[in-house]
Image 1 (cartoon, rainbow, N blue to C red):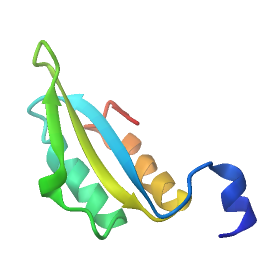
Image 2: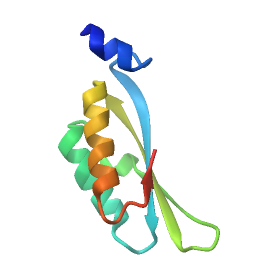
Image 3: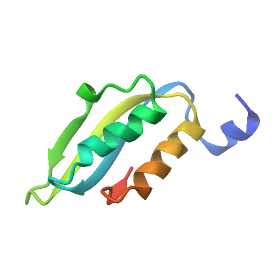
Image 4: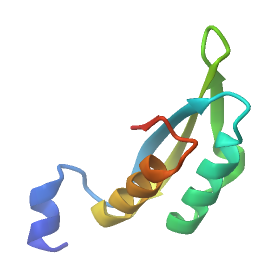
Length: 91
């Protein structure tokens, strides 16, 4: 692993890494998250994605655990998620 990569993160790759995105319910958020993850995480499997509605039902949280390979991979995923119009926040 390159020295600059280890300086930027405390994670050791590869590792299991949870990704969560939230947006309005009934917006197609699950499909958008699945599409983004399938581009950046080749071993991503949509059946392992879980969703949870907010108490009032207005929002939905989508969570998936991927096998993260590198910090640049995670940066690309989060960059695309946060730029997507259906995603209100991602963590």
